[in-house]
Amino acid sequence: MPLDLHNSKYSRDILKQHIYEVKLLDIVKTQVIDADFVVKYILNKKYQLCKEEEEITAKIVLQFQPHITYHELQEAINNYDTDNDSIEDFETVSNKK
Image (cartoon, rainbow, N blue to C red; front, side, top):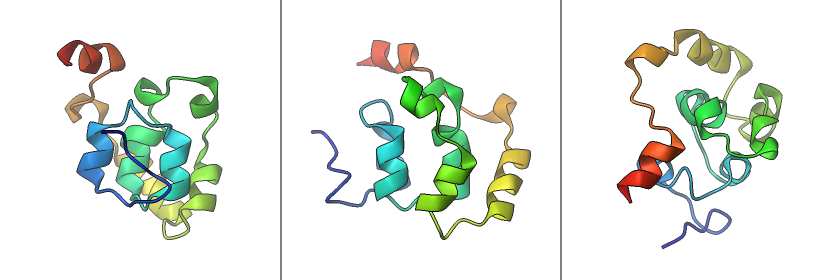
């Protein structure tokens, strides 16, 4: 079942489960997400599958997610530990299906 981002709000877990089925910019524009989600999924190159997604910047995120402050986003970026994150790339996820 595809997510209807424009008419429904989804939890972090649901968005994570369907991260490769939706456009990252649509998540930014339609969902309420936190700074950690932005860093782990929206700004992470492993989840950016097209040029449009690669062009998402912190400024764009802050424009559509006004509840996130610049300081909060910067702190999430600084504290992000790629070594201890369980990031799965597109090939790994698609091979599981």
